[in-house]
Image (cartoon, rainbow, N blue to C red; front, side, top):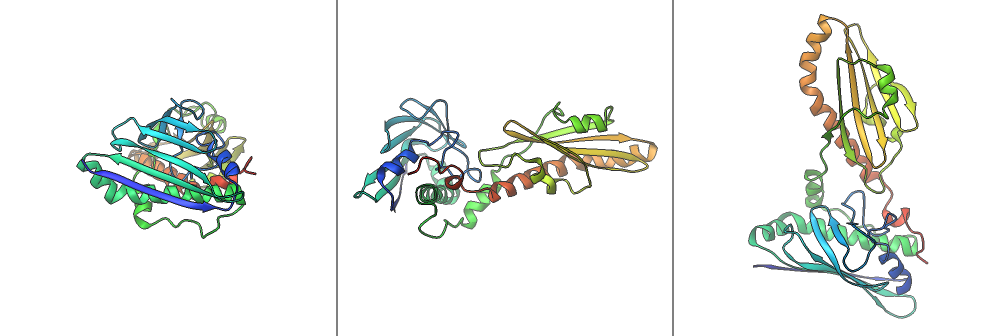
Length: 298
C-alpha cells in the first residue's frame, strides 16, 4: 500500500519552553494552535496525555507518546487516513530560538491515497502552516512572515465539507419567537454547532435574516414581516455551542394558505443555505486562535 510521508518545520524566534507551553494546550478549550473555526478543532476525550482519544474532523487518533513541552505523537485509530501517526516536536536552538516540526507518516489503501493527493493534502498543508502561524502569533504577537495563503483547492474542499444544518425542534430559548407567534400554522428550526472562535453574539448573524428586526434578547435576534395573507417571524438563537435558525408562520386566509403551500417547498432549502453561508463567513472572519488564546506564551 502507498505510504504518505509529509514534513513541515519552522524556526520560531522564541524560547523552546515558551513554545512548548503552547503545545501543551493543544485540544484544551483555550487551544492556541489549531486554526479553528475555519478548520476542525482537535478534540480529545481527556486532557492531553498518553491514552487520550479523539481527532479532528473525520480523522481519529490516540495519543501514544507525550513529553510535556517538547513532543506529542498521535497514532491513527480509524480508517479515514489509513494506519500511521502524526506528531509535533519542538527542538531548542539556543536560548531564544527553536524548531517546530510536524511529521505525518501514514500507510493507506490506494483509494484514500488518491483522495489524499487530490484533495486532502492541500488542506493538511494549509492547516499545519496555519498552526505554525498561530504559534508565532501566540509566542511573538505576530507571524514572522505573511499569513499562510489558502490555495483554491483547500478552499474548495473546505466549502464542500462544511457542516450541514440539521433539523431540530424550535428551541424553548426562542422566547421572542414563541411570544410573537404562540400558535403557528408552520414552524421549523435548523441548527449548526459553534466551534471555538465563532461569535456567540446573535447580532453578528444579522445578515442571515434580510428582514426588519422585530426584537432582540441576550441570546436571540428576531426578524419578521406582517402582510394581509400571513405573518412570519424568524429568530437566530444561540444555545451553548450551537446556533439555531427558527421560523414560525401564521396564515390569515385562503390566499396565505395558497401562497405558503408553494413557499414552504423552498423554505427549508433557503433557511439551510442562509444559515450555512453565514456560519462559514463568520468562521473566516474570526480572529486567529493564536491571537484569541495567546495566554501563557511567555
